[in-house]
Image: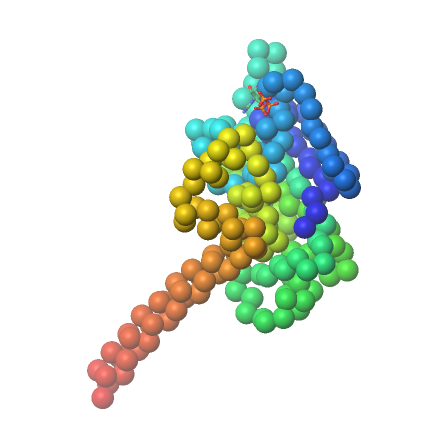
Length: 221
Ligand code: ATP
């Protein structure tokens, strides 16, 4: 997955619509303290499904909405759009998709629309008192779907590729379980864990139904 463009509106200090093109090669963002460099990285994590306000340096998720300054009123919403390009080898499964073939799953994934179109546009929008909503290539999707797309592509809100301030120190001090999580994210298998949990829940529900069915059948004998 190659991130190509980022659009922000009303997100933290980016009150006016702002577009960042990420060209091939190295992109550097420079600016004085407090100009919003970290906010850009947070915008990438946020659109990929970050759900911890604390890790966005806020008390609640609505703190990502432009809070106003002496000269400008606060905004009612924040929106971040991420345009990415699917790379060869990216695996994208739909929730509940049990097909074995990765290629087949990619080709039939409506989140990608036409399978010849390698572009993926994810939009996350938050409105005051209304929470977040996501769109993928123009379709309404769930937060979980977006997190899975990126988890499968070995990236996402907690990707080790996104190194924010203090993260190196945190990695050194991390517990073995946390380090394992980092390695699993880097290896692109975090999505499998989410799916395994889903499958286990479904299995438990099916077992409960089976037990009830057996009770009913026993009553009828
Ligand atoms: P440094 O070089 O010091 O790490 P930086 O360039 O990474 O700074 P950020 O930390 O990204 O800067 O930006 C901080 C700025 O964003 C502060 O001026 C802060 O007031 C502003 N900011 C954060 N959240 C909001 C918000 N919800 N509304 C308005 N401004 C915000």
